[in-house]
Image 1: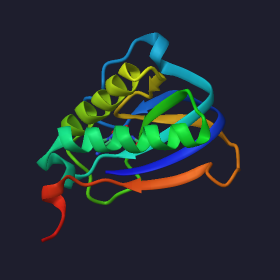
Image 2: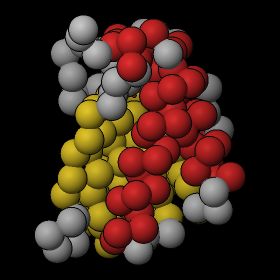
Image 3: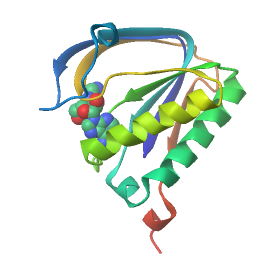
Length: 147
Ligand SMILES: NCC(=O)N[C@H]1[C@@H](O)[C@H](n2cnc3c(N)ncnc32)O[C@@H]1CO
C-alpha cells in the first residue's frame, strides 16, 4: 500500500464520471464532500496487500494515527487514489481495505470522510506547507517482504 498524507486547510471533491464499470454505489449527498483542517490520505492499495488485507489495514491505521497526532489533526479524509503504484490491488479488495481503514479511524474517535471509490473526481486541496504537511508511507504485509 502507498499513502500520500497531506495536512491541509481543506480538501473538497466532486464526483465526475465513472472510472470503473461498477463503481461503489453512492447517494446524492456523497457526490460532493469537504473537510476543513484535515489530514488528507491518498491511498493506492497494492497487489501485495492482497496477501493479508487485515494486517495492512492495521499498519495503515497506525501510520495515519501517528501522523495525525504529530500534526494535531482531528479530521481525516480517506481518498482512494490509483496513481501511487503500478501494482494495484483488485478493486473489490481495495474497497474493502479502504472501508476498514475508515471504520477503524472512526472507532479511534477521528472525524472521518471517505471519498467515493471507482470514480473520477475533481478536487481542491490546500496544503498547509509546514515541514510535516507532505509525507508518504509504504506498507506491506509481512509475507510481502522479499526473503
Ligand atoms: N483519482 C481517481 C482514482 O484514483 N480512481 C480510482 C479509485 O477510485 C478506484 N481504485 C481502483 N483500484 C484502486 C486501488 N487499488 N487503490 C485505490 N483506489 C483504487 O477506482 C478508480 C479507477 O482506478
